[in-house]
Length: 438
Ligand SMILES: Cc1ncc(COP(=O)(O)O)c(C=O)c1O
Figure 1: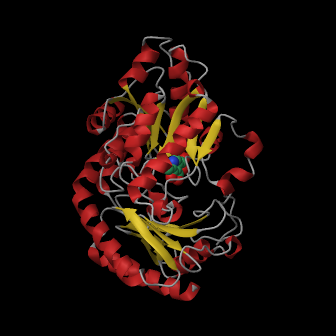
Figure 2: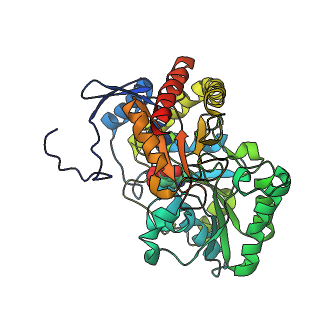
Figure 3: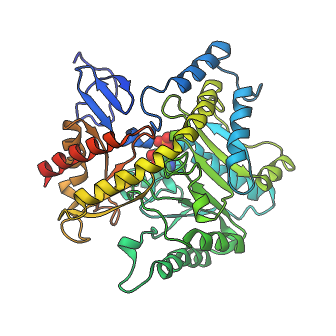
């Protein structure tokens, strides 16, 4: 390859040039085909050659590429907000559009803070989140993220207003003889303990991924956990912010993962699948009372970015929503098939500790034996990701899922167009990769 002037993600790794997309595959400039088993980072939910979304974005660009939100709204933003809020749980009635997941989380944190200030509860400045979580890489979002490795370097710059409780992960954290529902109650009560420690009047919100994502490795909550969390938030007058940046927009089989938990958050964040990878877009959807408190108070949300509600991104989001809804039955069916294939082929593998997830959102955790993780320095997740990539398969490897330092897993989050044949191809390629690594 010619000399590069691009600042790469990891200067130690030479990555190939991606030339084009063909359905569930990315084709390199050298002609090598890669089956996309993870949508990059759970982004490309429609695969790599969806015409409808690209066409909608292009049509909007030709009509009007950009209009700043302090001067205009656009039909694309209005329509996307209407369609998303119509499908959202509870009373989420307003959508604030940004350019990605971290910006959506920053919006949620600031909105929660301003909401309480408008209500005269300005002592509410603390946020409680969970360890082994991820909410983005900007400083506010990173502050409430429980990914020890991602935080370490920036620790002195992170907010003192972020506090942590343990992750909710029955397979790893459940005690001998403890049922899933007993564990769910114990895990949720950790929030209550933390609120008591901080003083309820100082807490603004609890922040959590509805289905734990890249850091913990696709872990759905045990039944009852979020209902108890919702009760605790209500009792203490604080907000529930759910981060569905990764697990939302159909990834788990439903547009909003929290609907299965029987709860509605006060703010939900979306991104990734919202633009299907065609355009960068994120959103924070908030409840009526929050919007009304600002509208009836100062009237002005002290926040904003240049590219808020970008018209082409909103047009892409609207088209993506329609395409996702058409593909959801396939995603649910192939997600089930893929989970069975993975369990059949790797369930008894001595170094596969757990295979879990929901819908097209699957985590596979690697262990030395039983639940004992490999030493972190072995970087097993990275070895598996690289071996799979050499086989022509993209899976997303990450470390630290056990305790923030140790624990290796891969995320499998394929596009919703995946066929049974694609699921077989993924299983075969992954099998060859695991043979190489172990
Ligand atoms: C749950 C979750 N929240 C927030 C983010 C941050 O999104 P972005 O990378 O688009 O800023 C991510 C990204 O992986 C995520 O998985």
